Length: 198
Image (cartoon, rainbow, N blue to C red; front, side, top):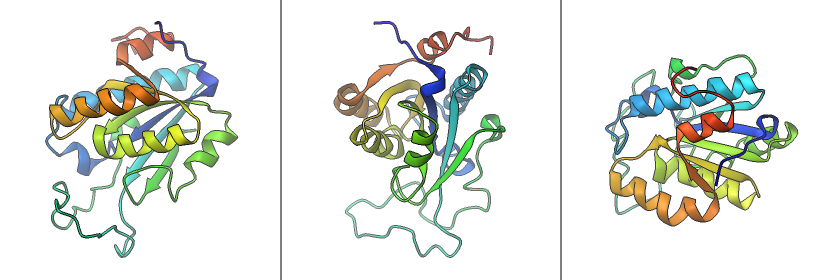
């Protein structure tokens, strides 16, 4: 089925494309490709009159709000002190005037932030999700969006994980049940953009 989008009611929500996360090893898509594709969608959606939301994750300055429950598997992506630019958004994405920047303190972008409020005030009912990583920050945000009633489009080649298996598992068992999985090319076509000519 062809993808149809109403740009004025659509938001691109980009999860954690920041200096610290794009420096990590990712699969099946290199982080650089994810950034390029997310930036192409952002440019097309801005041009069409939609909303772009850039989400980053970081604890507060003193670090006291970082989650620290005991787990069987420690998070592998930040075992020590983070570099000073860890939470800086990648420059390819902006922000541009009119974009929203959301700082979250955990995996999902809705809890404890004004994301839902800002989307609803703008009349957004459809979310395009991209970012790192598919089965952590993107999935947590997607589950919350589903419970809030948003239509969702998961841009498969504009997100990535730590392994191809993690990525595929979330696409197959979660995203296909709560939204539509599409490619960057399909999203750009629905926005009236020509892939490769943004």
